[in-house]
View 1 (cartoon, one colour):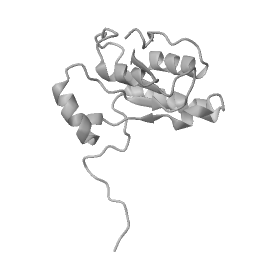
View 2: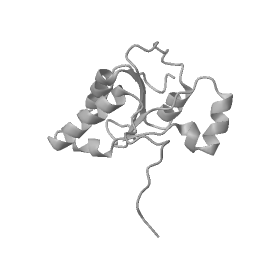
View 3: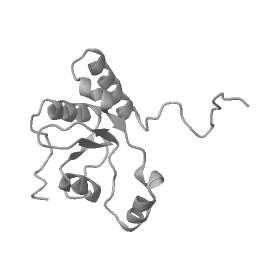
Length: 144
């Protein structure tokens, strides 16, 4: 019996959906190497939730305002349990702050959850979160 790994033609070697994700994680890797933000070693990509959760599959089929976050930084900071980021391309159409039910659900349970546009905005939000500064574009979840 062989225990060699066989490459699946359906899987990509690099799990990033787009260049923005790659840029954010390359930046995070440099920050960890430079010992600036060591917490970034815990940051990870979230797979498409509807592909992996039978519970969410049914919910997503019924809901219209769902866009699951792409990135999670599971580090409590500034009174939040974790940071969740839905990363959209910089040129994507802007969403209203009240348009994403999933993000509001994460906020209701004490997390910082935002939709950001482009790698630069994502990196700025992550820096602000780790430095415990106000998050641009984050409204108080009590108002949502």
